[in-house]
Amino acid sequence: VKEAIDNQKLGKEIKPDRKGKAVEIPNELQAAFKTNSELSNGFKALTPGKQREYCEHIVSAKRETTKQSRIEKITPMIINGIGLHDKYKNC
Image 1 (tube, rainbow, N blue to C red):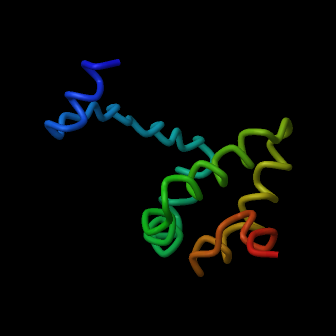
Image 2: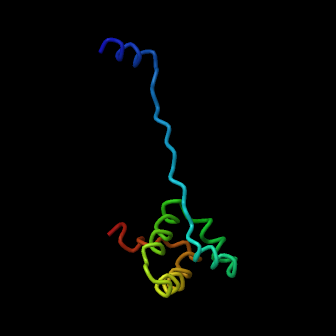
Image 3: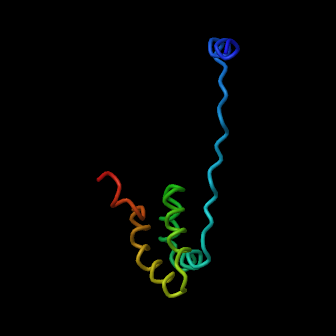
């Protein structure tokens, strides 16, 4: 305990190294980026957390048709910089 007090007085501090999770973009979304550059730029402008939300939303679908319909629905949201769950925040 005395060592901790001495370290505090000397200003020594241990800071943890934070490594953010890498965003894994699904193939369906990458294909949509190739056809729509505005979508790609909007996605890059989002925070990593919002990017992860969108990717998980697409990956969670089981059928290809569902994945495509989800991409069509979220495209305007991504372009406008809106997060997937923003409507539930700050309620």
